[in-house]
Image (cartoon, rainbow, N blue to C red; front, side, top):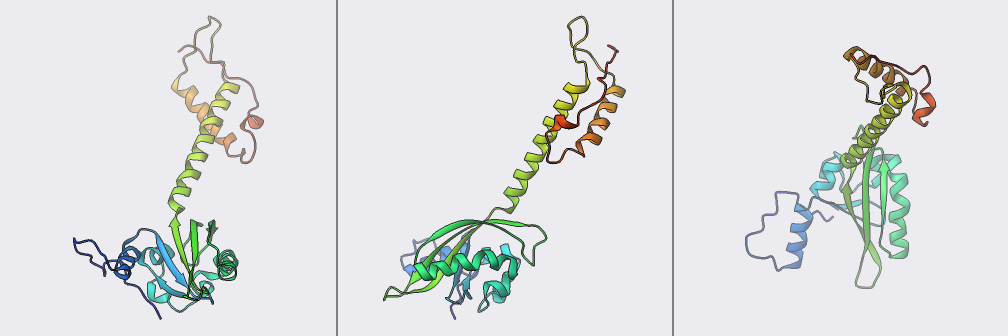
Length: 212
C-alpha cells in the first residue's frame, strides 16, 4: 500500500529537486491543498497532512479504508458517484461540496478537483482528488450577508417610523432615549422578518421627536 510522507517529513534542500518522484512527494507533503489518492474501491491509498487535518482524522485512519468508512454516509453519498464516474469514463472534473462530517460540528464547504491516474495500458487504476477548504470563507460570507440585511432592515425601519425632517425642512435631532427605544423596537421586529422583505413588518405610528 502506497503512503506518502506527511508534512514535516520531506525536507528539500536549497537545490532544485530534479527527481520527479521526489518533487511530487515534496508538493504532496507541503501543499496547503488536500490531496488524496483512491483505488477503484474508493479506498484511500495515500493522503497528505492537509486533507487529514481538514477531515480531523489522522492519516493512519484513512489508509486502506473507503470514503464511506472515513467520512461517513452523508459525505459518501455526494462523493462516491462522482469519483466512480472518473473510473468509468477516465475524465477529470470538479465540483462544490457542502456536507456534514462525523468529526466536524459545522457544515463543511469545499471544492473538489479530481483526475484519473492511468496505467501504461491506459486503464484507470486510481483517482487523485485535490481538495480546497472553504468553510471559514463561507461562514464569513454568510455572516456578512446577514449583517448587511440587518443594516438594510434598520434603515427601512427608521425610514418607516421616524419623521427625520422637521417642519422647518431641517433634519431632526433625536435624544438618546428616543434612539434607544427605536433600536429595541427594531430588534423585536427584525426577529420576525426571516425570509421576508423587511418593510412587511414595519407598521405602527411614526415617531416624532423634539429637537432636544
